[in-house]
Amino acid sequence: MIAANLKPRLHLIALLQDLQEEFGYLPEFALRIVAEKTGRPLISVYGVATFYKMFRFKPKGRQHLSVCVGTACHVRGGAQVAEELGKKLGIRPGETSADGEFTLETVNCLGCCAIGPVVVKDGRYHGQVSLKELEALTSGREPASPAGRAR
Image 1 (cartoon, rainbow, N blue to C red):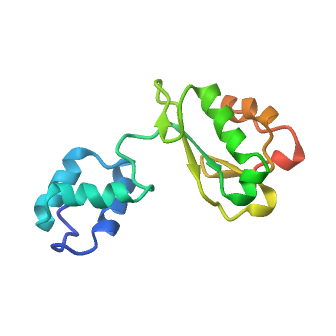
Image 2 (image 1 turned 60 degrees about the vertical axis):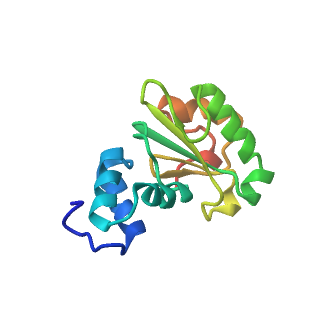
């Protein structure tokens, strides 16, 4: 895939997105090939990839949790939800648990401001998440309260 769609110095971000989709992250060997095939210095490719928060350089966990900490979610406790999830999992946002089970990240807005704080677990949106519901989110159960049900 890497060599198939390369045009020198064009579409670097789209190419990095494709690579991340294929591998789940941006492995070093792939970045080296991109640099070579596009005629860019490796540091330039890394510079672009590290500028955007969407790119990962390590594989993500089997379960992925995104906590909104945008303004509406923040005032409804989004930062506390992120902090407590991190404590429960033993990781900080942007990290993956040692067993490879969970990756935790914070995002600035998920576009669901009316139901904040919002946690997205493996693509399913959970609104009005309370600290009490975090156990359910990390144990595979659905949160019990109607407000916390996935959408």
